[in-house]
Length: 220
Image 1 (cartoon, helix red, strand yellow):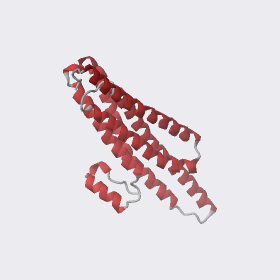
Image 2 (spheres, rainbow, N blue to C red):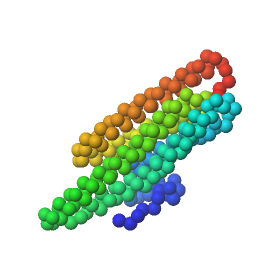
Image 3 (cartoon, rainbow, N blue to C red):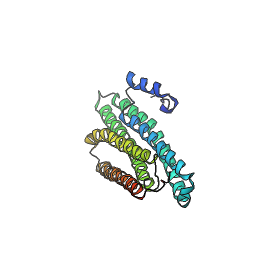
Image 4 (cartoon, one colour):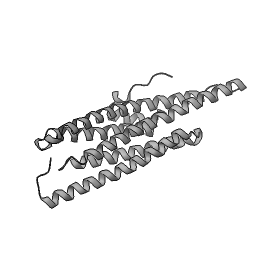
């Protein structure tokens, strides 16, 4: 199979057209990974703004560590958007292998099994990265104040949606793979994502309530 050009070389309009035209390898995982990568960009924006505020002086090191971690997850999500397309393309290619003879059927089955494992592990890697980004949002929610704090909440919600969108594809593959290890990781990631989503909501609500009670100047 010919290597596919990176989705990151396309404009948003071109990528949208690519999906509409049906290239048969760009699906929910690639789209969710891209959405998650943009959500991490929102988080990075808030961290950058916060780190440059005088009021955040005592949190400067923590903010820098969060920013570095967010950068790493952004790189991973950008990569998995392309990797998932390649993984699914490899699965489709394996499904087209000849199967007339018994040996051919055995080789085709083995190739499809291997490709399906890759097509399941790749989106799980994307989900893992998105969940880690959600955990960064939960930590950042204790630091940011003011209008941009809402962007942390928005980023976490986008990431949460991306994680569950990715699970739709993972679950379809797991029904055929019956891989206990991958299924256990999927359950763990869902628990972490749900927990983080609630943490971010609770922390932002609490921060807003405290700000209104004190009537003090917000951090941002």
